[in-house]
Length: 472
Image 1 (cartoon, rainbow, N blue to C red):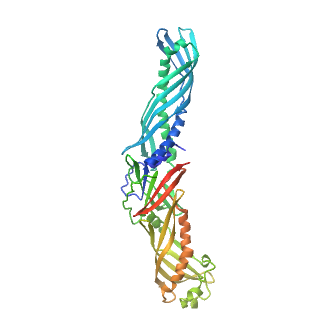
Image 2: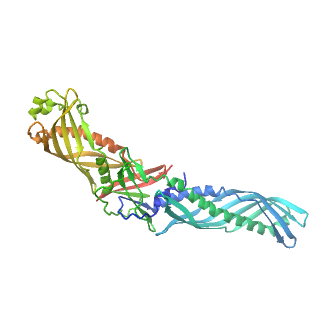
Image 3: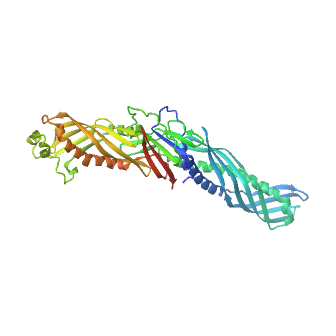
């Protein structure tokens, strides 16, 4: 992959949307150093591909006069970039500097002088003290993904020493300065375009940034930038929209993200802050899609349970059911009546949900006869974790309160059904919810990016993921 695809996390170009982000990301100096190590290895390989063209010309060399020369078959046999640095330029971009680099070349030489005298041989050129400075700018393409480019590249070839092999030794000292000058000039012209190519090679990989990431058949999450990246001397902070949408229908929820700030932590390469707005927008989307509803049937109840979904069990508490619908199986429809609300408090995630339960008797011809409708207010506690490059979770039931909305079988005490519905929620509904949460939803990522040494903290109004990164 491109050596610097890691730099995709340096930000998308500024957009004009004036809104608070749902997700914030901080790239620390540790992350920038990791990106530099990958980038330098790739740049070194790129520079080794330099093709020094054959050189020829005429120089006046005292006391001989005009000397025609040609240099052919020039190849790089060794190249090193021992000292390099990437530095953040506040509010601007990234500066690249390479010092004390060296290049070893081998080639052949021919000369002709005094119209008829010819000589030839080979040479080795050692270039030391090579320096390269460049600036990397970050912009946005038409899709909202980042593009990077090189500006203000300067390459300087330092000292050089040349050794000739074969030919008339007395001519070496007279002529070496001209060969040295020609080769150094050719190298300087080659280096910056190759540096620019290395940086440009990042762009195909930057296009893999999941600006709009599909979650499932109902939802996708948008990670486009809402403000310009904030570049300081120590980190790059950028703000992502972090909002769920129904696939093909981008409807805004009736609430907005509130401001939040990432803490000044620097032990990991990358920090991702996900606000309650992001998770609540997911609840809004799934509720709109009708995905937060579930039919419960008796085959979803463990065989060992003495409580069955039939009119006999419920008739013990509501006699009218067994009188009017004797010996019938039942079905329950559990659904939300509005989007659930997720609350982030230090070390605690709570989900409040309002829903309804409609009970039906299943007639012999499979017709559903409604029995009653209950209003339900409940809360669950959530445990969140990172798996791969996804955020996943699991919930446990805290409490539930039910009131009677409508009865088709006369009045009854709702509290008498508490144990039945607690059991139904725990053995049938919660496992379905957890099976979906276990699949997770994608975090912002690029290409084949892996998260390692990951920790997750729940703070006030947002969660914080601290992680290191590896690219494969």
